[in-house]
Structure formats: structure tokens, C-alpha cells
Length: 114
Length: 115
Image (cartoon, rainbow over all chains, first blue to last red; front, side):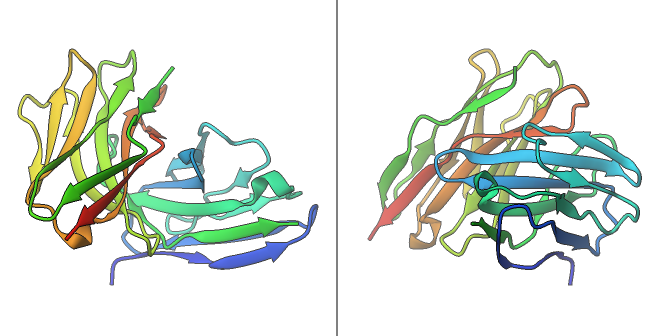
């Protein structure tokens, strides 16, 4: 089954404790992206990647890191999480070459930082 | 600066009626894409419809159509014959930016279909 998977689905952590949210897709997509969703703000793009070893900042990259060492994986790293990073995080992928059309979203990861 | 505006926080529609969800966008890009996504209460994001900036015809996908008015920079979603399962949050989004592949989302419209 074609899908985007994220782990963990739920995470409660404390301020400053490094964490990684994994994202994997099995559709051989070039484009992958991370978003955060907050009430009243919609989705905001954190980082995106057009292909292996190619990443770009979205609208809200501060406090986050990403890497794209393999085509299928695009982990989101929070080196020192803070409470303002409490949010619902979505990973997405798309197979468009050069121009991105439909994005397939993962199920979301709900992160709480205390 | 790129921006998507959805001015309707909440909408109600009678079952089997049509409803229009508004979306306006701001961009100086010549080439861009416009999208609508549905987010049911279960939380997943579901792609509905896409319109390219150079497409002359309005996009349609089943009961969904996108009313694209380029000069007015609007990309309204029309849902015909509303069903109870259409109750959800709807997000308008635009692809653009410096690389042409950055995404910008609106704040969403919550649609409730009344039986």
C-alpha cells in the first residue's frame, strides 16, 4: 500500500531533550516536506526537500533540522525542544518532478513539550 | 510575500445543497499552483483538487470544482450536492516561492453539513 508513515504518532517530552520524528514514504517520491499545524494558523511549512541531499527552508524553520540521506526518509530533528514547538506535525511527499502537484500526507505526530 | 486568505472560519450547508468556500491568494509569481485539502475530524489531510496558474479551464474532480479567477486572485472551492461526510476542515494552499515548490496554507474553513 502506497503510504507516508510517521513515528511516533504521539510524543510527550520535556524542554531541551533532543528528539527525532521519522518520516518514510514507499512511493519513490522526490519531494518531501514537513509542516506544523496549530489552531487558527493552518499548516505552516517547516522544511522541504526536492531530492536526496537537497533541503530548503519553509516559512518556520527555526528550531528544527532535517536531513535527506535516502530518498524514502526525511526525519525531523528538534535539537532542543521548547514548549512553543508543541504542535501537530505532518510529513508529506509528492512525486512531481520539478513541479509539485498532489501531496500525500502522513497521519500526523502530536508533540507536546512541557 | 506569498499569502493565502480564507475569510470564512465556519460555514453551514444543508445536505444536497451546493456550497462555496472562499480563498484568495497573494503572489507575484507568474507560475504557481493552487490546491484544496480536506481534513476530517480524524485528522488526516486529503487532497481534493489542483489548479495551475496557466490552466485556462477551471479544475473539476467529481463533486468538487475550483472557481479560478486569476485577475481577482481567487480560487474558491465549490462542493455540489453536499453530503454529511463533507463535514470537515478545508484548507486552501498555494505552491510558489523562490524555488517554486514552497507551500503556503490558509487558516482553514470548518464546514458543517446539516441533515
